[in-house]
Amino acid sequence: MLTKERVVELLSSVKDPFLHITLEETGGIKSVTIKEDKKHVSVKIGISKTNTAEQMELQQEIVGILKRDGANTVGLRFEALPDEVIQKYQPAAEKAKEATLMGGNSNTKFIAVASGKGGVGKSTVTVNLAVSLMRLGKKVGIIDADIYGFSVPDMMGVEKRPVVRGEKIIPVERFGVKVISMGFFVEDNSPIIWRGPMLGKMINSFFSEVEWGELDYLLLDLPPGTGDIAMDVHELLPTCKEVIVTTPHPTAAFVAARAGQMALKTDHEILGVVENMAYFESKTTGEKEYVFGKGGGKKLADVLKTKVLGQLPLQQPYEEEDVFAPSVYQEDHPIGKEYHKIAAKVIAKMEE
Image (cartoon, rainbow, N blue to C red; front, side, top):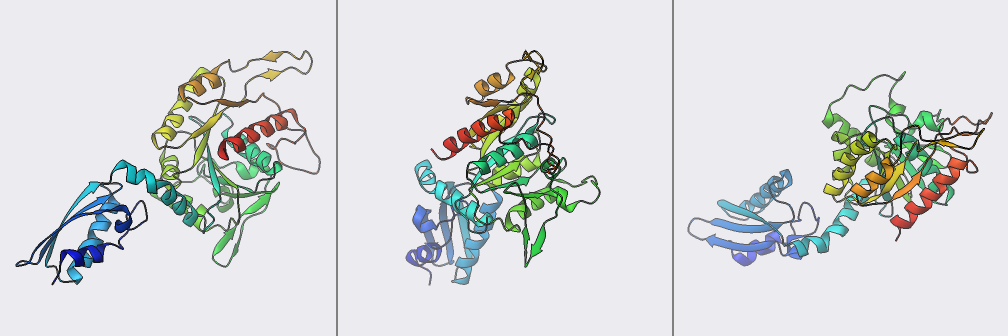
């Protein structure tokens, strides 16, 4: 015959679906009532997030456990755990979730590079920030998560394809940075005609099926805007931090604010704003021409309550005969030096 003590014993090892620790640890078994004549068990359970698909799965798990041990019918009620309990256990749970995603590597820090619209140089910033972090001694990878507009391989001059070793994909390495991109799996620059759920599976695969090894930083080049991929990343990587890219134009900054607000609403810290195409400096006169206007980066940073990490002028990388990488700035290039400063600021913020 089921007793209250037996019910508590049976449910103590069941895990909260979001905190990934047991109901015993969270104090999640709130009350147990048993009607002996009808073998009806009523249980009130506290969990970190209610009214979710995970709650439904947990409900089925608990009902199955109790019925296997003699209950004819089970009544379940769910309530939210106190905020202090969630705050106590959530950071460790999020870290464990991300470590599982990365094959057990719990030391990797995630940085998403986002923008409100296309054409502002988000991928260029991703590539050069990654290379600059590597030059500062960090182990770095890039996921080109801009599934429809993948461009990272071309920007870095990557000509190889990933190889498969066992059940894992080995990312391509270029300039000391590991890279994976949808571009590696598409022939002849074909268009991608997929819906949201398929895209989500591909992003999951970029984590779970790729042998990243030990990384200090994994950068994600997000699609512009606030669509499915951006939402999937926010769900997958709770501790991910973000860099928002804009141009000085007020409209670009206005649109970029949406991406920033999405980050804030999902508790993703914004590291700062990078203002790309800030100005053009004439080699002849040395004068700065503000081709796309002024002030967009500062305005965006103010709206998002963050700082401008750097302002990057319009300028091409040096041409090198033996190196093809059309968007990677050399370490001694003026813009390469600016990226070095931005990377140093990012490291300081990530490791403070």
